[in-house]
Structure formats: structure tokens, C-alpha cells
Length: 324
Image (cartoon, rainbow, N blue to C red; front, side):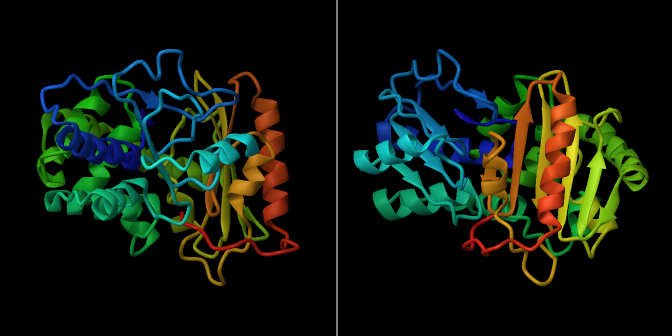
């Protein structure tokens, strides 16, 4: 079980698969990969924990006793206070959480090395890029917008794909192959070419629809046909902005995405995960989202306005530092 349509989610699944196959001595075992998406209520399908060994990575905690391994780095990793209390009371030697980790993939790699002595140096490149992508540690927003690195080709395809078989193919390839080799595969290079062209068109749409007010870029993309825009476009267009609040909609949900500019100075004081949690969402202190049913677009727009208004004001108390 892994965070779907996400580079870090797939990288996390790849690393845990390598680790567990070595630990369990079951290289020939059948592995099923199930993408999970944040939503209101229980996000786990009914058959989520029906394997002999069940692992969940880069996604929220579950108290289900059939969950054997869990790794997450989201500040909002626990749906309720009772879930967090259950995790802390369990003191499981196979369930780990660190909201300060820049990526879940890196957190997994470091944890299993320290706790179980397992390492795979050939996965260092994957871990490095997971840290860069998930924590927005790019040299500049233009680096993320130009999409030149092979890892960003893979990221772009994963975030946009509607092919249910492609993420599993990526996860399996990530376990053994360098990213440049993976990005050159026809099943990545093929879909990436039109996605990059569409991305360039998205830049023009964002130019038209986005506006900056009191340090917050607001954009309603719900009628534009853009369902998963590159989050760094706004930072490239509005380098002085501290935050971005965007509304999008697809067949499954209306979504309010909230981000803070990694290159903004001074440091961004608001804890976005806490703000989003008030509306049933979550994330990290510096990036988060709220998901609603697709017909609740009016509510999504209201929530986006309320969050943008809050971000334009100084918080009463500054939150603790956290990972992106």
C-alpha cells in the first residue's frame, strides 16, 4: 500500500519491497501494489490488508492489526488522536513515523539500515531524488518547471497517469535500475512527451488565471481542464509569493492544494498541515491539501478563499519546524 500518483510513494514502495524480499527470504513471492489516495473518511479499501505480509508506506496510519509494516513522514499521519495514541501504545518494532523526514523513501532507507542493518547502495540515487522532489529541494523553481532531469520525467508521468498498471511497472523497475534508464523506456518516454507539451500549455493558463494578493497566489483551475498542475509554476511566475492556494477538480474529487514557496524569505510561518486538518485534509507543515467530493466545488472554492485569507495574515504563534 503506497501513496498513489506520487514519486516518493512509488520510491518508498520500491525500497520496502527490496528490503522485505531480502528479510522474508521470499524473492519469488507475489507482491501486489495498491495505490492509496487521501480522502474523507477511511481511505483504505476493504481488501487492503489481505496479504500474508502487509506494508503501508508514505500514507496515513491504520489501527488494523493486519498491518505489519508502516512508514510515514506526513505531519498528519494519524487520522485521529486515538490513532496516534494507539500507535504510541503499540510500540511496534516494525512501524515508524518521522514528520521531519524530507521524504518517506529516504526515511525508510535510513531506518532499515539503522534498525536492521539492510542497505542497497544502488538505491542511493532514488533516495536522493525522492528527498529533492518531496521536500522541494530544487536549486530553483525553474529547475522543477523545465523538467529536464530523468527523475522529473518519471515524476511527471506518475502524477498524470491513468494507466493502473504503469505505477507497478515503475516500482518494480525502481528496485533495480537507474532513473535515466527507466526514463528512457518507451512506456515512460512515450507518455512524457505529450505531458511536457501539455505542461508548457499549463504554464500559459496559470499565467492567465493566477493572481497574487498579499503574498498568496490564488488560482481556480477547476474549469480549465488542468487536474494536476506542476506545483512549481506559480513560484516561478511569482518568485516573491510566500504561498500558493489552488483549486482543481477531476472525476473523483474537488481538491484544494496549498503550498509554501521553498525559496521565500523570510521563512514561512504557517503550519499548512494544521490548517488543512481543520477541513478534513492534511499534509506537512509546508504543503498540504483538502479533498472533497467532485460535486462540492463551491465548498472547495470557499475553503480555498478562507485558507488564502489566513495565509495572508501573520499567525498568532509560529509552528515548529517540519519537513516538506
